[in-house]
Image (cartoon, rainbow, N blue to C red; front, side):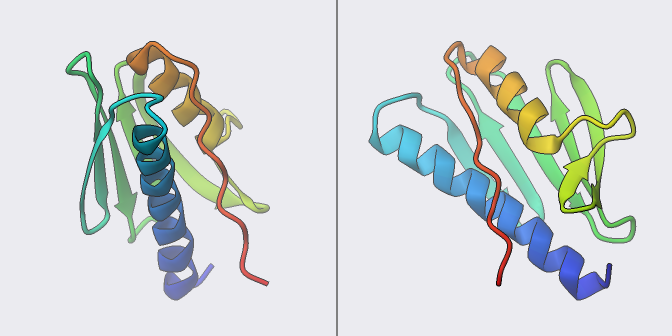
Length: 113
């Protein structure tokens, strides 16, 4: 993957997460505070806990830190996977659900045609 492809894919992930959080806030599902600075997105939950998502351009990775632990993801065959084969959006949804106290499911961004 080229650097420009990585940046496009990583930006789409962060933008999709922000859009989901905005929808949940508008629909009164959960009040998550999303703060983005460049390639860093911090999600603050009502409990005071946080999930921090960070792009790692030199490694072409996405990193996630949550109460459950820290995770590193590489883009493989159309999915962001950790070294154990767990998919980014599945783990993010599980961690966010646990920290928010409600069931949440982050959608995967669609690939450009």
